[in-house]
Structure formats: C-alpha cells, structure tokens
Image 1 (cartoon, rainbow, N blue to C red):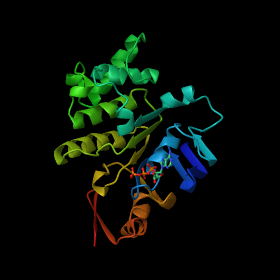
Image 2 (image 1 turned 30 degrees about the horizontal axis):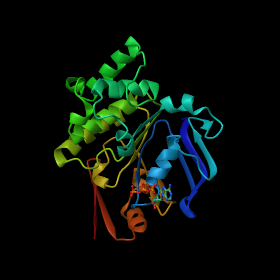
Image 3 (image 1 turned 60 degrees about the vertical axis):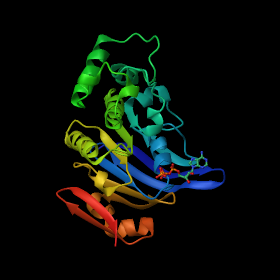
Length: 260
Ligand SMILES: Nc1ncnc2c1ncn2[C@@H]1O[C@H](COP(=O)(O)OP(=O)(O)OP(=O)(O)O)[C@@H](O)[C@H]1O
C-alpha cells in the first residue's frame, strides 16, 4: 500500500520552543487516522505540515511521495483536502455555498473572476448532494448554522477528489444531534473503499467516527503512540499522554473516555 504521508524526524522550533520533537509517522492510502493529545501537543502544527502549509525546522516530510521543499506546492495542494476552523474564517460570509465548494477546484477562497468549467460545477453539485447540502447551494455561507458550515467545509475539502484528506476538529462546537449526524456522514465516507487516506484531529474519543482505523497520540510535541486503534488508542496511552488516569471504553466501534 502506498504511503501518502511520511514524516521522518520532523522537528518544528518556534521562538525557541520545540513544538514537534523528532516525529516519525507514516500514513498509508487505505488508513483513516485520528490524532489526539492535550492542548498544545502540536496536533495542528503537524496537520499544517501534512497540508504543505508549513515546513519542518528539520527532518523530512514526504507528502504523496513528494518531498516538501522540493516540490511545486501548486501541484501538490489540490491533491490534499484540508478543513479547519482557521481555514473556514477565510471563506467570505457572503459567498454562495456552491461557490465555496467550487473555488476549491482553483485553490482559492472567494470567487472573483475565475471561469468555471461546467464539469467542475457538476462535480460541486454532486459533492454538495453527497454531504446533504444540495438544498443550501444558493444560500450565503454566513447564513448557515455551525453544523451546516462544517459540512460545507468538508464538501469543499473533498471537491478536488484529494488523495489525502485532513480534518482539524470537524465536530468541535456542534450540539449532540448535529455532531452525531456529522459523524454518521464521516463514518460512511471513511468506510467507502473510494475514500482517500484521512487524518482527523479531535479532542474527544466520542468524536471518532466508525471506519477510522489508526490513532496517533501526541503529547508535548512527541509521539506517545501510533498504530492501529486497538494498540495505540488505549487507556494506558491516554493516561500517559494526559498525565491523568483515563479509562477508555469502546462499544460497537464508538469510544468514550473519562478520568477514573
Ligand atoms: N508560530 C508560533 N510561534 C510560537 N509558538 C507557536 C506557534 N505556533 C504554535 N505555537 C505553539 O506550539 C504549541 C503547539 O501548537 P498546536 O496548535 O500545534 O497544538 P495543538 O495540539 O493543535 O493544540 P490545541 O489542542 O490547543 O489546538 C502551542 O504551545 C502553541 O502555542
């Protein structure tokens, strides 16, 4: 199975602080990873490297078999889907939902004077339908609920049919019902044989959708555990990462965690 992401001894230092410390991690194309760890562990920083949005201070990052620093980012970026709250803030509130998704094909946010291909329009409509957003395609992004906005961000991130999909806390701030609805859709997507490799950062065990296969647990910039969920996502690993005795339980493929 081809690796879509390979970090070797990746270290990031900012203002004298080591944010990532010799991280080694490989993601293969048939894997769906969840990344967890305490606040400040370096999860978003790692995701930004995987998204080719920043370079490590040292070490190498291979993304889709291309080495970061030696590859044309304009060619690489459409092959990587990325959705995060920070990215969502760059979406103009008065942009039509269809355009929010469509502009991903051109790696821009905010529609100006691009000429869109009819094929791209049809693909955007299909992606909106897949994420149950077709009835909102003419609405302005800023008028949508939080849950709808999160789904639009994901639809936008899969518009280019990426080989690597990166999601930074897609279920954050959603109410229980909206979260479960989103997790069902993400779970369905993750279990599809056509889905790309997925890496999802989350703070909560409850937010891991069905179909996710692997976990990377970070603490203070270091890897505490990485591997199949059964090995890397355990009470012992979480206890070590959070410095607090945590009990993890699993029922029918869904997890919950609490301090003992
Ligand atoms: N440009 C920067 N300059 C200095 N410090 C930074 C910079 N970017 C991030 N950091 C610090 O690096 C650490 C890791 O940040 P990061 O956002 O990657 O963590 P995280 O695990 O995603 O955190 P959270 O769970 O709170 O979102 C934090 O302590 C943060 O303050």
